Image (tube, rainbow, N blue to C red; front, side, top):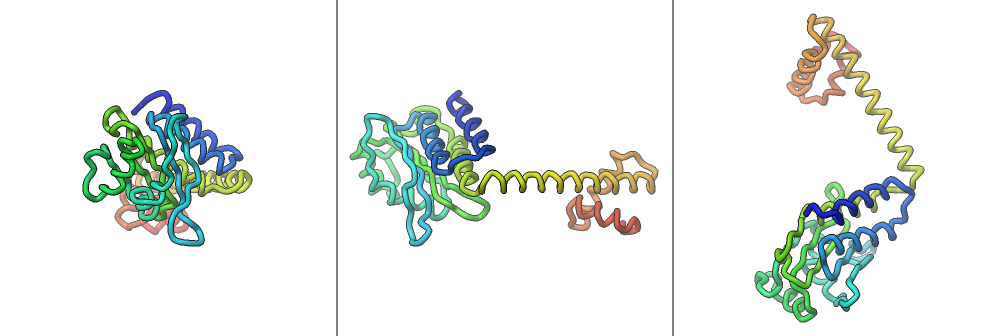
Length: 232
């Protein structure tokens, strides 16, 4: 699904993540843009409860003619995805597998046709899920799972970011560390080129192979090399 709506939505959210955004507002935008890009009738974003087991509805977006059955939010598969990080795919509620039979029957009574549930994952943790419901079967038109997961991932990133000052400082520190690492790598490559009488490109290749053989990162190997030219 490479529609203009999807492209614009991802660009918009990515830009907002670089600003001093309001988390609740950004999650609402993600939910609304996801529903629109999928041509869905209902989209909800839920988060794992902090003080007790279960999930809580944080944002939802519906088209004007739909009355959302919010009881569905707290049942599998929405809760399952939010709690264990699984992607749930039900193409057609009319022919759902036995595993989802009760959920599908209830969804069908409310005029829904299919759904996808994408987990909000950050590193090894699951923060919640983004559930998208359609009135038609999910596969009746082009709908990209990768787009849905991308929006869920952006929501997880939004939840992980702190205030703009802290983020700017962290980004500056990271950039400085990368530049320092690069300088060290280039210095070590220059030393190898001089010692072995080879060009810089070949020296880089030699250093990369040596670092891999010793189970080290290129930066770690370069630092050792600079500290002790005989390290090799």
